[in-house]
Amino acid sequence: MSDQPFAAARVVVTGGGSGIGRAAALAFADAGAASVVVTGRRADRLAEVAAAHPAVVPVVADVATAAGADRVAEAVEAAGGVVDVLVHNAGIFRFTPVDGLDADVAQEVLATNLLGPLLLTGRLLPTLRAGAAVVMVSSRAGHNPTPGASVYGASKAALDNLTRSWAAELAPRGVRVNAVAPGFVRTDAYAANGMPPAAVEGLFAQVASTVPLGEVGEVDDVVPWITALAAPTSRLVTGQVVTIDGGLDVAA
Image (cartoon, rainbow, N blue to C red; front, side):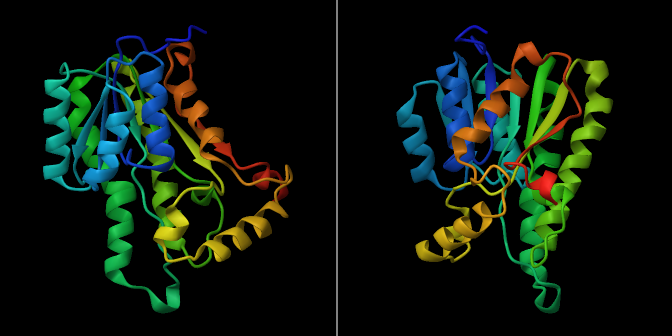
């Protein structure tokens, strides 16, 4: 494969201020993308990503809202008016035990993880040209029980269904749709849910002991799959959900 597989490509990555989204955005930029529109809610984090590569175009937007989707569409228009790769990475995890379910929290999870991809894909659909790729960042939780976080799991299960349904629906347009489904990955999502560093490390140690390959994931374990599914060399791959969990599905 060429070291510039995305030469002149126009890319959009949601939730690109940190973690998997940030790393994916910079990977596309390093692989030759002409522009990488990166969305997020925090201007300071987006500015850091933009400072790391001149191809990155930061857009402060909540893509779970129509106004946010419009702002991204405006940035796409300014960057050339077409999209070759759309990565739906924006997502949040929240604990939602059934015996203490908070409706506002549940709505926040569903809006960010599910409504966002729905709104933005619909808004950008006219710009997705033949040969374009959509990549969802789902989760192993979408196809496994998620006690205490069932709303998160349900949102990712819905994302998996969107992946397969849109793959069939958009194939006549020449648009491919795939997803990655990571297991436990070291990102700041755990701290964002109020877990102190010692608790996070304890969780990772416990999880690693149950993973057949003996390790939890790193961001760099996921990003190459995002770029591979988006690359022209995957032109016959669509409707797939690739699980990246060290073999937890095998052990389940």
